[in-house]
Image (cartoon, rainbow, N blue to C red; front, side):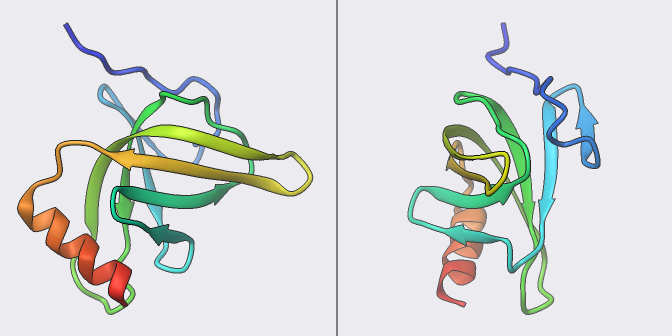
Length: 105
């Protein structure tokens, strides 16, 4: 049994859809990395507990980092945009090291 919840909000109409949920590619200047996850802006709200995968672009031209996580907060309005907080799940040691480099850079 899978605990995956597919996004049906249409917020990622330009992003790739797969059987595992939503894949969103975020440019290096559009997210902030924290110890346990990321924050990023969207034009449409994303429901709490939505599972999704994000591909984070490396600002230094290195390899992009792909992480799966759960949306734990979405605040804002249609006029100002939405700030989404996402907590990562099941990070590999390599992904953790890459995220540490992204947060330092």
